[in-house]
Length: 247
View 1: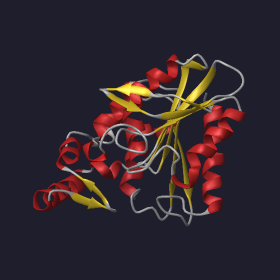
View 2: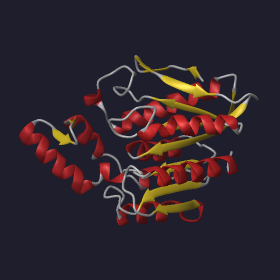
View 3: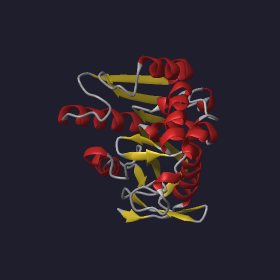
View 4: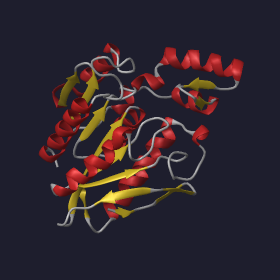
């Protein structure tokens, strides 16, 4: 592992690059979820990065602006800004001497999954892995309710993290599925059967969007965070195999 920081609009995004012994190597950029950081739940991003490096694939995990150790305030978060950060990260990772710039992929968890899907429509990548992507975060009805709460209280309290008007205003400009159109490579979609963030409408939207590109896995008995040891191990196995097939 080695540190790799990325400059974006006057902020330093701090991250860690897992490198295999042979270079230049294909690489995957890992995008964490809302209010998270570059280790992800149960250190799954660390574990995945190590496993991929052992198999000849580089992995870069970073903190979005305002999260983890990166510069910025988390209250300034917007989905569009996160997409812009991912594009800058792809450029920086592709420029690293240990990475093959023509063999880059993206992976995202929850809000990071939504972000990765939108970024993949703007920058062609080899493959796209989505863990419980939070398309609901820009859903029109959810955003309408959020705007009302923000108007009354100044912010929307989402599990102890405030969401401000800047985020909701940006969400109104995004269509999670139409704006993700353009990625032509294979897509892994994984979600828990008890996930209340990843509802039937979200699956239908991604199924209609990606059609034959899509490889879907439903992990039974777990929710949004894949909350059992077997489920998380299965998730890592599925993801590792998918990325190795499509690098």
